[in-house]
Length: 183
Image (cartoon, rainbow, N blue to C red; front, top):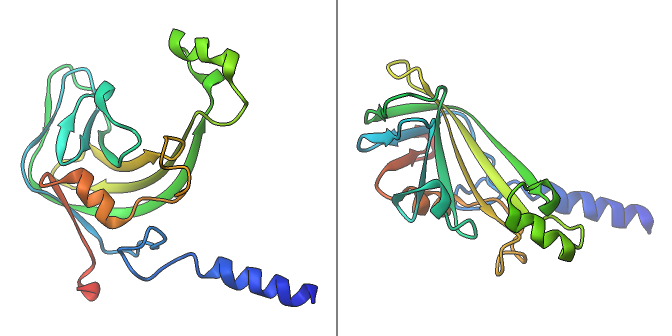
């Protein structure tokens, strides 16, 4: 009986990866392209820009309970840096889970919350990272899309973003194009 239960558990785990790009369990294959549809400017003193609800949002205005993406360059510039529209090769897609505990935070607000801390993560980010390359723009590094699973309303989900949720965060700024064999 124990063997049957073990086999059923393994079969259930094997089904977590999905061949459907609309699924949050989709395992990205090679050949994807990220297409930047309009110039994207990264402010001076920064190497990142955030996109959420199809708009550029300041770092401190991201609503982390909803999907957001961060486009990252290799270097911080003293002047604004602009990515030009074009197609970026997606070299690799990785997924990770990153917990942040209240005790890890340095702000006075977070320290004040420590008295009520139950030891569970305060933030739990399900992260999808697209490693990008454009030979014409070698400073381009990656695009990371995530959301905080510990936010009210998200705790029951505990999953990575679906392709539709990522596209919603990007809006008209950037398109994710599947390999030709999937079209």
